Length: 355
Image 1 (cartoon, rainbow, N blue to C red):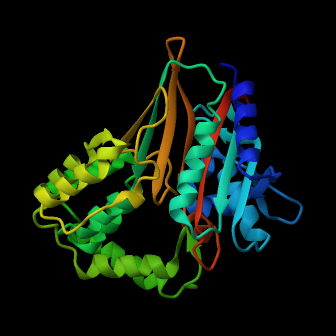
Image 2: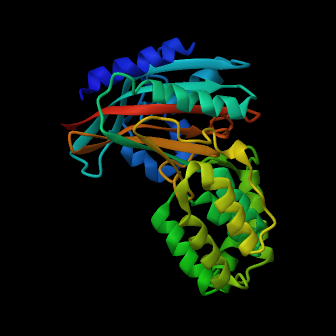
């Protein structure tokens, strides 16, 4: 299966569903990336200073470039778009750069979440037409369900914020669960350091943004932490519930039932219905449709439904398309209000080049 054929299939599928092709800027302001992902991510982008003293960078991600276009052009209402191009990042090996050829399509600014999610998945599935493969799997997860579970657990608010915020960072998330199990939160020394940082920040512009959060938001979190620096009671039991939840994996048509059985067993006041699952039955030839509670950890900005399509062709497994909902991304980039957005993308090639 050639990447070119797959790319053409995706572009045809998007056009047939009424998506409009757009060009995206190759260069964006570096602060948009740093504000969202923090200073540590800066080492992975190609940045430079222009003649006006502004720090710019080559786009490391086409989804972010697309959302910036929507924001900077002050667009309103529903927009169905698709695009293709290259994304640029540095690899862990500083001597190499990674160039990804990407094709993507999105629905932005719509209020019809259920149907939009379904349309993005159906458009992705249509791109598989004329592609030869023996078997495949469509895996669906939902970050919102995980966050709903966390909101119902008997732990301090700051622990809920931590677990939700770091769900996508699997290794660090597992370290947090270990701390939770031993009721290890913060010690008096850390509290005193936080107090000093808190009072220093009080003098700064509250609208200033650091790593995707305003000073005002950071102050609120510091306030909660300083006021209640105790360990989380019943931490071991809560950690056990979270780990058990993340193991849930089943055919999509059994997902709601399996989740609700889990909530009832653990006395969690939560019920999910079919709206969380854009596809409720497996009617797709050669494709298994599965729900996985742990899926959705590959990107920080996902907020709801997430999915991926993997196929097997000539004894080789290949990931075809990844996508999901990211309703907070445009507001994280600077919009005053949250803008609904859902999309999917395919990384066609990954080229390494010496710097």
